[in-house]
Image (tube, rainbow, N blue to C red):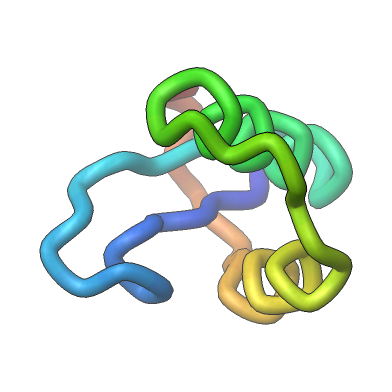
Length: 63
């Protein structure tokens, strides 16, 4: 499993995503940016920052 905790990018944030692949974690993070934060333009730099913070996880719980 792969996991992204948004607090690693945005201090104080509590949102996280977990999935089998890095691509799915990134997709969920981008969806979160669009739906919860109203972002319409997701820059490639933001995608790279998200990817850099994705870690392997032993948990099977999905967010």
